[in-house]
Image: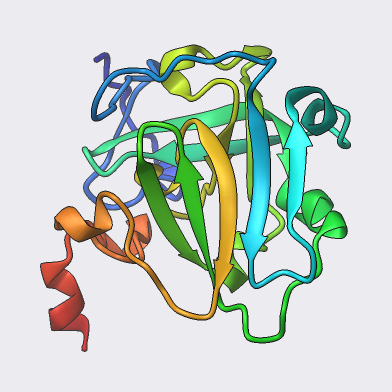
Length: 201
């Protein structure tokens, strides 16, 4: 992985303990799941007034947006100015009415992967369900046909191969969170591991 020198101007965008790279490394536990657009669907369920199910075509008919955001991996690399295209969470939520007690979202993915987010961070304006990256469809190893993008948190929260969102009153640690990674994952606070949570209390 090539590393880029960090100027003073860029340093303000790079969290502590990170190095810059121009590459986009693939980090995945397990094989890349198969994808068939004829059977793929996207669901929203849990504490919602009415569950939602969209086919591949219906999801791609939703309003498309672009955003440029930095990406920070817990393995200490950062890649700046990624151009993502997809559906902003703010636009998706125009189709969803949450129950008042909803406080968290559990992201369900192919490959039995899950991750969790507090609702207020999930609903931030820079959160997106993306299917394109830097002008091209996402590569399968990077999450095609759909990945969550949460720029403010470490990359494992930007889950790949997303299939469903479950809204809940209670937090539920996801795949990496139950395996020793921090439940929140703020790169600016270097929230990498779960043992740090005890130190923060």
